[in-house]
Length: 321
Image (cartoon, rainbow, N blue to C red; front, side):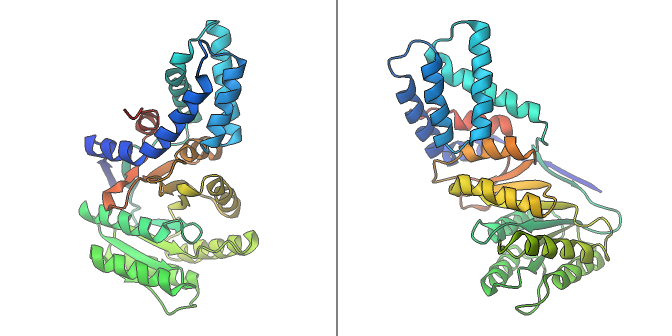
């Protein structure tokens, strides 16, 4: 069974514009200072732009790539007015992201396996909004008539299990949990087995958010996967890493740690509203070549949005009047 729903609409765009307002304002304030008194884009302006992009948490590798693209354009066109810089920057960033071919996701879609539910294993450090993201996804899936089962695999924190339990009751979906300190792999096994028996469409499995060390993390996640595969040989079908966008460069480090510890297949970047660090989405999308599937731009359940590159860049470069 293939499940598909186009989710980006006018209301989503307005929410995205509002959520990225601080990032956009901060960026344009810095860029205005960079080009003040300049009539054309020259080496000095590009040096200033490089600093602006890095200060906006785009990241050094992606910033260098963007600057090189603009340098090539200046060389080709010979003269570019500084007033055109934001338009050119927008075009070059969109071109760069389009070339990445890293899984543009404009809809909530998955193909349910014939032998059971579509299993999403959710990973990320404590405090990034992992459990809240699971709850919001569960509610969005539930609204579309899907049978959702939650798995409380973070058995090391009572707060994590309690929070997921609250979400399960709020959304009206079943949850599989065990006593504190239980083996997370055992919870994963029970969750997938129970969901399969119920004929569920999708499983959202929470996992422990400790980055105590990479080897232990790798071993734990590998064990969870192997135990789930005793019930469904191809599970999990998706490993979603949740990152806190408001932490800026720390989100890059978390992405690096988790992608080295396990095969991450999608990203959700939360807490972008109320922060000026929206550029982190551009850098992570470019550097890790893993689809950014969801972004969080508010507290509401619908403020967890499917990431649309074109709409994100448009909102990021939207000048606040």
